[in-house]
Picture 1: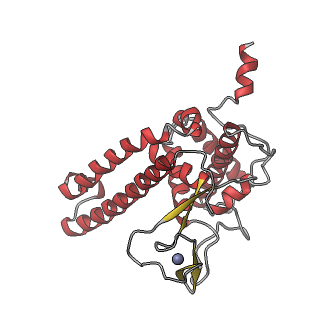
Picture 2 (picture 1 turned 60 degrees about the vertical axis):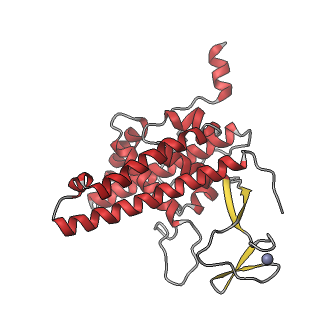
Length: 280
Ligand SMILES: [Zn+2]
């Protein structure tokens, strides 16, 4: 089963490789910083001057620079994300990979899809188990989210029973916890961009939250506001990407983002037809 891809396969694979490798270096850097703090009794900021951390951070910068030319293939990056303060190549690359592509593991012997049986990956055709620690072969599928709630749901951003989903031991997750964690980082990044449109929206959401949740702690209210901001941004991402891809968009979607009472069009974005109108 092969599907036509809307972007060059080597670009998709390289972008995925660079983003995942960037994450590997981030994890190594954080772990090394923690060990150095314990060993040397220094503060987190001071660990950067140790060569073991510096070398990892330098390599992260190199990977980030290598991600940029791969992103040039994606209009949602060139036409929009490059203008959004707080979103750099690493966030952009991850969002694009998550939004457009699914990497389906395939059998290294016969090329058929692997399926999960009793927590192990087994070939659906020749029944061979996948090697545990070897290179994993995959085929790529294009994803299509007809509604923004599907896109939010696979990232673990939809409120279920009043809460954001969390992993439960022994239960298969219905969302990607790495995407959920990336979204929190994106929210933190927006908060730091003083004077940017997403940061201003965050401030508005905080003020609303003070009235709406007077009994909650300030920390809890900040988390709620950040979560709502991230959901708004993800809906914007969905709307801009679908518009650029010539796909239909549904409106309004405040039902998806509890708390937003009216439609807020994507920040930093002029839809193509609006541009025409303003020119004439
Ligand atoms: Zn097979």
